[in-house]
Image (cartoon, rainbow, N blue to C red):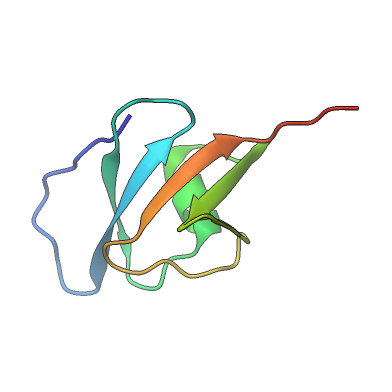
Length: 80
């Protein structure tokens, strides 16, 4: 599900478009410039059992996001 927040964008802020798990719509999340994947997950209240993908590449939690990034948050598939 993609959501859009509507506060005025202040200086030093950025917007990241996020599709969470298997929701059909994306949302825009406002974060401080230079925020990491970890900070995005914290803002969304997510942590365990997921991966964050940008342009078909899995991101590490310490990687920085940029204005206009589009990411997908997916469940981790574990099998045996």
